[in-house]
Length: 357
Ligand code: KG4
Ligand code: ZN
Image (cartoon, rainbow, N blue to C red; front, top):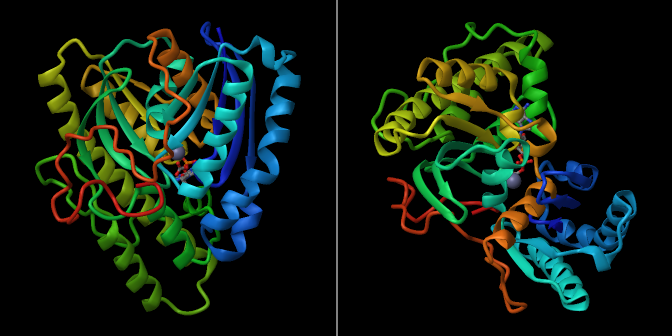
């Protein structure tokens, strides 16, 4: 079985071809970083237009790299949300057109399910597993019970994890995207120099909050001499990164307890999303998982950040179960994995705010 995957929910245009034998025949990602950099964040209208410019060509290249034609496709999986609505529409409409012309099923994929199932593309891990999903648009702890079956244990009540990295980097003048920039600067820094808050640390539950930490970084930066020296930048970056890692570890400890109580047979903690690229976070989670009798599975970096291989793989999983969609499938700006989950306390509404909500 060969499935074409299309991803266009934010600022990456991506196309991939994946088989049901876990072979990645092609996996192309075109970053729009340069287009959005001058604005310090993703501009939705620009993102949608760039997807239109590049998607057709990227799909053609993916097929060429894989050495297959449209007639060999068994299905087309396209991200149908959540994300920037104009951007999602471009990929989904393209997917529908190809599915219609090739007369193969369309799979309208939830981008978050793509992240959640990406671990099963690299290893045959069994359900259920515990997932920490941390990216530019999401910060959630979920039990992945099966394809399309999720139980959310906690989510952020304000910013997503990657958003926190991006905002802190902006305050430090480290550029966008912030995660890699903070990690680089932090390597030279002293994480103990500044005591930054650890929001919700030690509290019950598995929710996250980063707004207070961001404000603390703002006040700290304002208190330092301008322009910031490289030393100050590095020390703030290291202190910030340590605070985030502490909070994530603490929230994940609570989630592991709930997971083990509900699913004693579960043996894996998966970390996915762009922030899972962070080395300190990976190390901390590995230690934590092992101390609790779980193994940590962190997909390789190119599968952690936005890509189409995870969308194609989700297509494979769904197609194998007969879970296909009609050509009337709608793009969705919001699409929670667990629609029954209570809104995070204090968030005032279900899910999180922002482009990926
Ligand atoms: O999953 P992703 O590519 O896009 C979304 O779906 O949002 O995640 C991008 C996010 C950005 O906020 C970026 O700053 C963050 O992941 N990120 C990192 C690192 N690499 C990327 N955060 C911390 N440490 C990193 N090394
Ligand atoms: Zn993502």
